[in-house]
Image 1: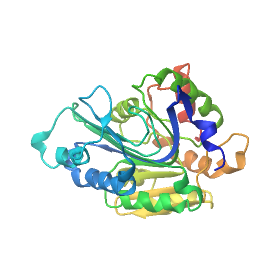
Image 2: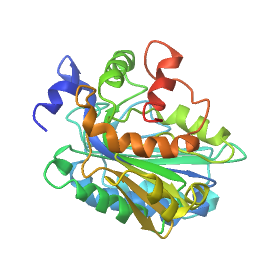
Image 3: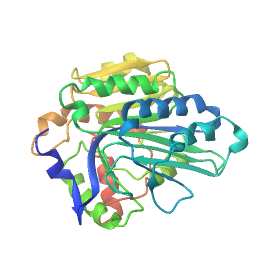
Image 4: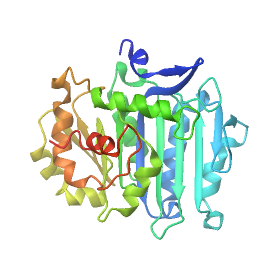
Amino acid sequence: MKDITEQFDFLEEGVNYTKICVDITVYWRGSVFDRADSVIGFYNGALAEIGAELKFFRTGSMSGAKKLRSDSLKMVPYWFVDPKRRRGIHMMSLEGGAHANEPSDCAIRVVVNEEHDEPIGVAQLCLPVAYVSETPERLLNLMKKLTDGADFESGHAGYSLNWDPTGEHAFEAKLKMGQIARRYLGVDLFNHVPTRIAMRKAAPCGIKCINWLTLLGISLTERVGGIARLESKLSPKCEVHGLSGGVIIMAGDRPTTGDCNRQAALAPYRSVGKVLAPLRVPDHPAFFGSTPSETGRWLARFDG
């Protein structure tokens, strides 16, 4: 997409504090050690895509990112193969930017919270926008590869804005996210901490929101009545792809940044959003914008 970086990438003293990308994000409920194969499979699949581009790593015990070491990429599989290594929080952030602590368009995150009665976790892969420029189905095929047979509760994929909620320019990033949220509805915005809180409290389980691709695990697929019922409710421009562990719903034939000045491109997103609105987790904490209600309105942007 022409000039897309100029619209979404913001810099301070030559360093990005937001970075446009396409991403695949998945969430699970329950201990990571009960689905270690799924999480490690996602992680290894993500490394196969962008491992050569990664430059920095940060774990939950580190105050900032450091240059990647020869053994850094082996840490996530090592953590999750043995329940005896269980800790309250497991976090790995891998980035491919030119500078430490700089959001990039090649990134992997795995964040696990095992401290509560109902553990929760998230894994994310960020890819350059060029990944979908010519062949958008590449993202669909990759999401299938990373999630088919996996024990994930929900997920989404499409355009996304990478940023660091703990970074030096987090305040500026939140303001820019508010601007993007009001105009570019197809760009996912995230802060995994409040989303994990909302998902852990939700009963029954639910989704954060939709994107071009929306993953529903087995329980959520059952809640919407299965594939046939989903297909009967969605626009003909949407597709439902079955997985052994749920479904992936595709909103149109390619992802869009969702410019409000081009409403036609958003019609498939609204079709999926309206059908899945009852699945959105309630009471999601705010994570950008000038008021708490701004986040809530953005999460509900495709509800119908």
